Length: 122
Image 1 (cartoon, helix red, strand yellow):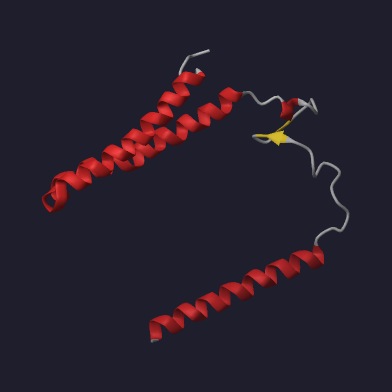
Image 2 (image 1 turned 90 degrees about the vertical axis):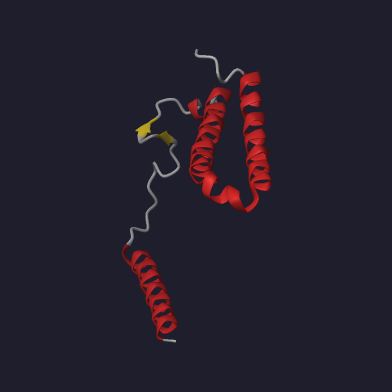
């Protein structure tokens, strides 16, 4: 029970500190809003054209999609391959089939990106 009591005590202390910081911020923060508060910026660099945030091209979204696909592959396939031999003694067919389904979904994402032209260097 002492472990749970410490956890509950930590949760209460964290809640009190969080609420206290929000109240202190509300009390001493300036009440005048900043005129640049709604100004669009990207990567910390202010934009000079007000319509430039509207002209995002599709290739940036496709690049993000490819980044997610490559990250998923690296995050799941490599550790799976490292432990497959040890785990394969339990149920090799089922484990292999699960990875096949995962890779099939990733391949569908690659085919979509390929059809959209995201793999062509421009």
